[in-house]
Length: 198
Image 1: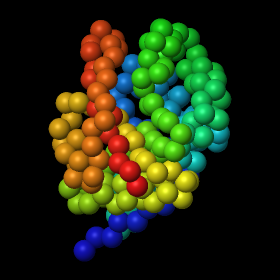
Image 2: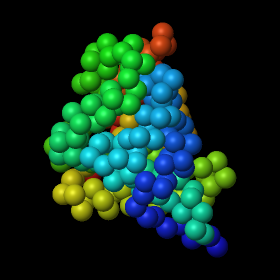
Image 3: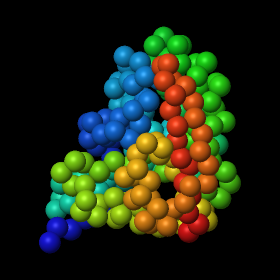
Image 4: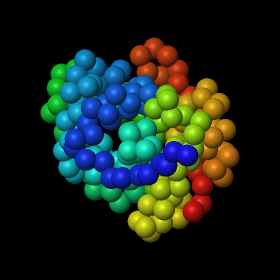
């Protein structure tokens, strides 16, 4: 039987992170443009930003990377939002200019987090490991981390068309608490906000 373990991410996990992050957040390449990979890599390797390895965990199955998650609490987001934006602007450069109106318009909708909440920003399990409990192990660790940070609720956002993900989270006790939409690159995207008291 395979064993799933979780360890904190390190800057050395950057290639693994970048290879998977767009599965969880396909909007990033549209928002960050042609410098998306460079932006994601730079942010992940650096400290003191919301995409940092500091907030990531890597799932290992028999020692092989099988997935990751990235999460933080309200205080961390409030403290690091400005420095994250500055780092993104420095790395993405002029390619980010076209996304500024979108980011300003949707700042209160995307990745909304309230005091006492722990926010799951990204979670991905590699193709070959899906359906083997890796995601459930990551979510259990997420909830443990939330409690350790003094949070009483875990929140996440998932694409409304991703019935498999919604079913997975519902099976773990998460419920839909809100639905929101935004327009990006000419297309409407609808998301479900899900939450669970821990």
